[in-house]
Amino acid sequence: MIEVLKTKHHSVDICVIGGGIGGMFTAISAARHGAKVALMHDRPVLGGNASSEIRMWISGAGTRVRDLQETGIMEELQLENMYRNPKRNWSTWDALLFEKVRFEPNIDLILNCTCNDANTENGVIKSVKGFQLTTYTWHEVEAKIFVDSSGDSILAPLTGAEYKVGREAKSEHGEEFGLAVADKHTMGMSILLQCRETDHPVDFTPPTWAYDFPDDESMNNKPHNIYAINTNFYWIELGGMQNSIDDTEEIRDELLKIAFGVWDHMKNHGDHGAENWELEWVGFLPGKRESRRYVGDYVLTQHDVEGCPRFEDTVAYGGWQIDNHLPGGFRMDAKDGGHLQKRRLSEPYSIPLRALYSKNISNLMFAGRNISASHVAFSSTRVMGTIGVIGQAVGTAAAVAVKYGISPREATKSNISEIQKMLMDDDCFLPGFRRTPSKLSESAALTADYGDPSALLNGIDRRIWGNDNGYFGKTNKAITYTFDSPKYINGVRLVFDSDLDREYTDGNPDALHTSSTLFFPKSYNNTSFGFPKCLIKRYKIEILDELENWNTVVEIFNNHQRFVKHELNVVTKAVRLIPLSTYHSERKTEDYGSSTAHIFNFEIY
Image 1: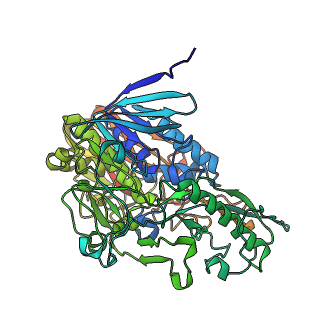
Image 2: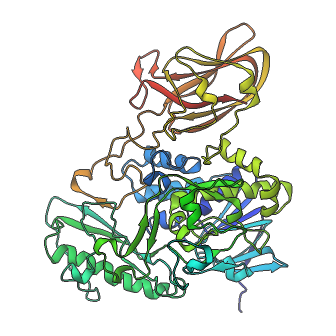
Image 3: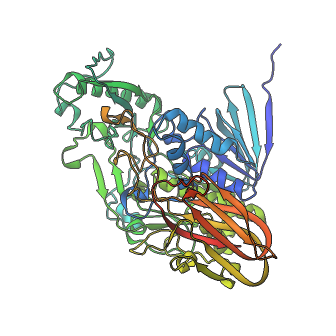
């Protein structure tokens, strides 16, 4: 008897395809704003290129331009990892990514499930279908809005959504880096290595099928100083001259031959300081940079990335350099950077919501390396720090669209101010925009036992453009809101200083901005990467009762987050925040290394 494979049906508000950083943040932000979400991902672990299967650390605007470290869900994740995973263990990182999605209310997580079908009617997606390999079960998801964060934009061929592949001609957008004639070439994909330095010589015998690179010229002069950990052998890269989707398996096989050949070169051909180094891990899933890019109502170009215009529908930002890996990849000579096309940026650029939904499929959005951008602009937007803030923006916008029963395009036209306010309230930075404090906060008298607290309500929650924008106080000194008469207080919003530039954080300076690392010199083998010393660890919130006594309503002993909200639901004439540095009974120090209270926002609502 032949059995029919079972089908499990899901009915949700928003369906996200792909559980990389963009898809994760889309799902989390939408769920936190009340939408029911299904996240379908074709791998057993989340994180995409940042997962243990590929092991690329998260880079973004803050990696290249001072004061631009991504906040919101991104900083929440990074701080959680710094706090719980100080040695940058990849399994702990995988578990943290899993936890962030699996235990977020309103998310139905469907792992090991490959989307391979879609039902589209009159330019509207009705449902998608995927096969889950571990259970041999079909999963069919009906939703109001679909978000493609699959990287390869699987919903494009399945729905007829307009997309592009390759590099544009200069005539299309007038870009300086455009080509004389457009082509279908892309950036390649890479396989990464993980290595560790030991205290004894370690031999290496390459597999017989690995390529032999007897000298630097045979490796096309690629940079391979093992102590420059941020180099990370990204140049073990191929596929740009082929079809970066159809030819992935063939490309992977070639990359493995190169990867093992490169390590053989490091160990056995010349002195590269690798005698005591051991190869711990080689990726068998290539990290892909580029394939299909959707076409939205707006196409971001090199002019936008370098000129930084202010869009009225700004919902995210970037700042990573123009970082165009030329299609030849490993087979190109690297002398004088000849395999790359780079240009540093000095300011953040805005990303409009119009570049994050489909031009011709009304309920399709995208959050990942597949946004509506030219090839040149994409070379900056493609990094995961930028993809993360795009994901949070898309999830928030999708939740608003669902709330009002409208399309993403309609939400952009009629609800963009609401979307932007929600993002800024959730600690997302939008260049050129200033968050408006709550009316309740502005109506109260704001005082402090030490210093001037007025910066707490200036609407900018980070150091930027030469301005600190924060309040410098002292621990054990109160900041107080006072009213003429009792008021209902729903809650408080707090933004502490988490040292976004990691200036006062101990550990390997080459890895402080990264979520994980790949190279472990002996001197760092037992190193725990530090935690921001300036973050407030312990604090309490008090309210004034009818007898003029202060009562503690919130006390936190082990805070390790920058952005915190607390529900109070009280009626009172005064609320105060007291950053603490000691237990009063034991006089025991309870901070991360600084007795200064640097706070960007303390607000009541």
